[in-house]
Length: 220
Picture (cartoon, rainbow, N blue to C red):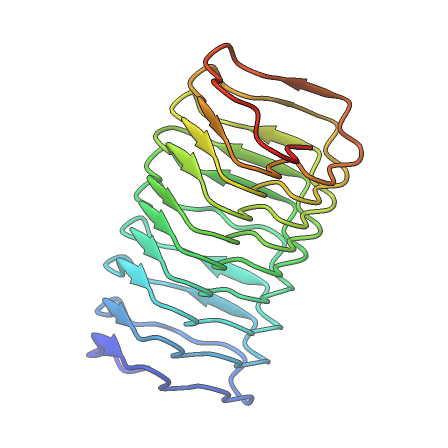
């Protein structure tokens, strides 16, 4: 891509099955929605410093994508941005990240661990839906709520560390996390949504905080 490039528009390279790798110029600051959607042979990307947002479906269904490098300037990962990128095994999220939108990493089935940085303030519904290889999640810092179905069907998840800024865990947030055996709910949490741990069939130990005011229906 030319060194003068500053933006790539919506759908620009959608379904370009011949693309295997890309070199983004340092001048690039903007990536459009669906820009590389279903580039099924794209195997690696390294986004330059200056890119602040990855929009909806930008790399969705890039099923050969293995290596992803994100810039320290990134603040938002849009809805379905890496949906069904099922070859990504590891990913480091930058300390600048504020928002991960719905389904952003859904069906990334080879991801094994995720650390959500302390900068993160918003985590969307189904963000890690059906990440079936995910075993460990650490959420640092300032996040105050987990949305509906955030970790739905993460069937290998065994370790979850929640921040003491968290005040609510949404309905079905950990629904069908069938390998989760224990979890400690921070003392800051006062609301648990219905079905938050529904069908967590391996769960044998859970610590509920004294701040909790009610236990909802079908919690387990």
